[in-house]
Image (cartoon, rainbow, N blue to C red; front, side):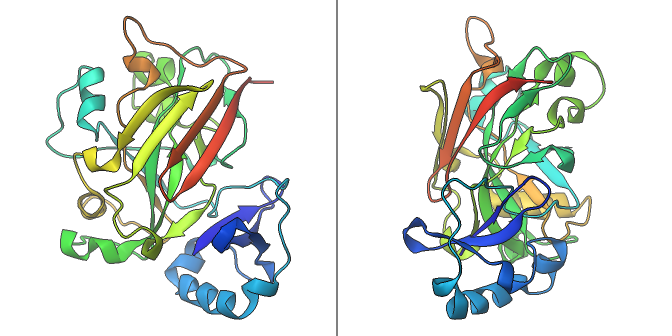
Length: 285
């Protein structure tokens, strides 16, 4: 299945993207795609409902705003330097263990919402990433059992304000958590839709010029390893998001000097089988 949420920001309703791309309203299903949903067999209930009702559910207009395809999770954990070429372009050593940091869930946005340069921001950067949604509570999960804890996958653009992240002291979370810095979607594809998450083309362009063009096969730590590893340090709850890192081609790594986004720029990105998204850069009001 492909899960969507649509409507005004903060008042999104659940829906589905059906075969052929048709979008339908699943409000009659009666549940949002949140922690309770994922942790209580919601995907199975939704699948049963869809088999009975989706074909006659109301259409969602193509002009309707898409929101984040899941409700706000308890946490969003990101992985740094998880592609060898990205580590190289930033002059960083290949990590021996996954580099983890958090991103405020208040930064979540719809896949095609504008991204806002925060007050005082001057070095806005892009990072296309494969995001994983957790299906059930996970604590001290063995790698061999980790795949069963994955509900599905979606696109995430891990926007970063590099000046806040790297020049203001403290942890990376400061440069990662501004409002609109985590557009996800357009949909959440359930795990059965993505039989191999490690063989997907992943790309991003800025104003039509390709900046990132790689494959998830180049990840240093794969999805089961990441789920297992993180669960050794914190309990992952249903609906939590793990963003698995970005390949080479970020603005910070451009030669001879970094290139950052400015108001009016258009960032487009996509991952095989997970669709595409697009954000226009605007300044803070």
